[in-house]
Amino acid sequence: MPAVESVEEALQLLAEERKMALTSLALCREDEPESRQTPALWDPEPLPLGLRLLQMTAHLNQHKTQLFYYLKLMGNAFSTRTLYGI
Image 1 (cartoon, one colour):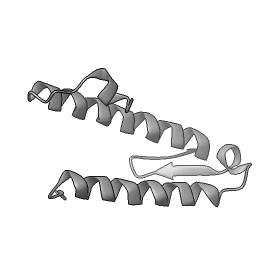
Image 2 (cartoon, helix red, strand yellow):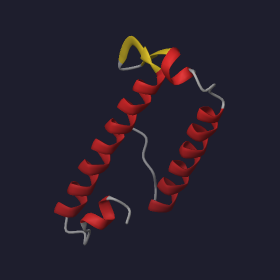
Image 3 (cartoon, rainbow, N blue to C red):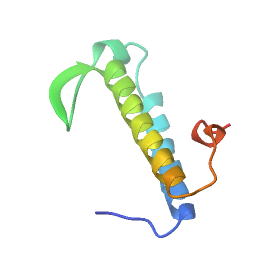
Image 4 (cartoon, rainbow, N blue to C red):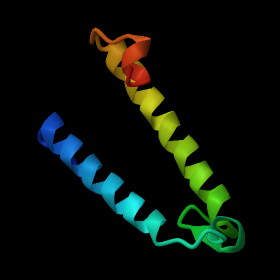
């Protein structure tokens, strides 16, 4: 599986992904989140683009929380403020 060599590399890759996602969203017409039906790799059943984006966001949030608890159980000094980026 792909891996990163450092936290800095991971942050850089995440920043690039964020930029690509925001650029893609900016290209959408205002009606597309409701009208455009979109399948996903994990679910071939087409759903409205807006709903698909909400599902993806919720899924990523689950992974973020899993990573937070994993790192916390490993002894890292994190708090809830770290989880929510406060």
